[in-house]
Image 1 (cartoon, one colour):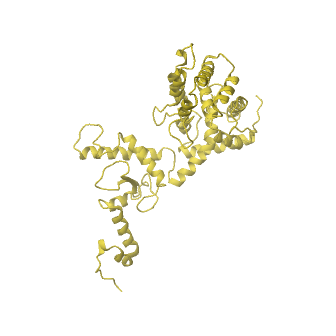
Image 2 (cartoon, helix red, strand yellow):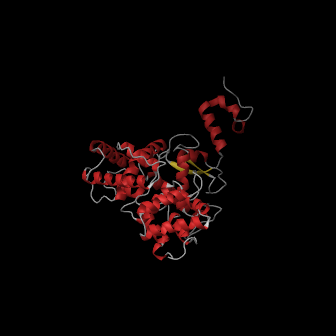
Image 3 (cartoon, helix red, strand yellow):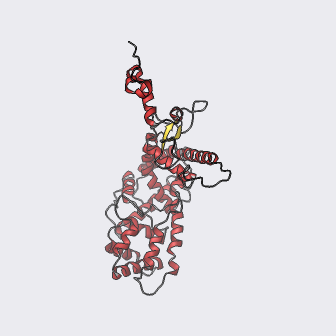
Length: 389
């Protein structure tokens, strides 16, 4: 197979990818279908399976198009959030910073019967092979505009062995890394999409013939390119937050969440496993709390909110747990609920106890500055305290 990819450039990029993945996952790279690659990227095939069930193309009516039935099915195939690990992020849906979501756009853009009919005819043709795919995509671009991620996603649903989802910015960076001049941003068309898929087929060939990987699918080559660009960004973020490898924060957060849920159950006199009183545990499940803890970790950049010291996720072997992260209630009389939680070092949490953040900071100020700080905190020292000469 002829390829436009330079072997030396490719193997240099692959070797870096393998090192980055090992650092990211905490174990040597095995293949593109296990470890952190499967964990991060395996959702795509699972989402596709669910999307095809929601699409239910075999049972579409063959009569009058433009009634909205096919549009409704398309939207169902986009809006997939089975779990936090199986969520469609191959095209935008729900609230996002880029403006209208794809479902919202489709509903607003296809208001007229003629445009809706045109859309449904092309989608019907795509999933029932009654026309040329190239003409279909170009007509959809003419109808909807250059919504590359949306259209590529629909073609991926049609045939995963030929078509792939796309996020132009990331893949353009990947192609640039491999010394390829293909660019996709703002260039949604059949010719560009065909070149995109053909290039990833070349990457699949390189992964098989040069990197020595077996059983590489087109979607695996797609995952390789995505992670080749994104994992270095993840590693920078992990280093900034003090996380050593992928999954470490998630495990620690889930452990703390279950411990908190158990404590609140016990404090309420409960003996059975169930969602505890909302006034004590303000989350539906421990999993919801663990996600909230991870959000707090990111917002605090892995720093104790009280001391600004870097927190640890686990105590060093044979060492102290003083700097290990803990969940602190801002208002100690309040509950384990959104808005009343922060992350602190265990020693700071212990020192603070039932007092307020303000009292804690005042005492730390006194410890740091000594007598110079006494008059600044009369609540603790009084106005008549004697200052030694």
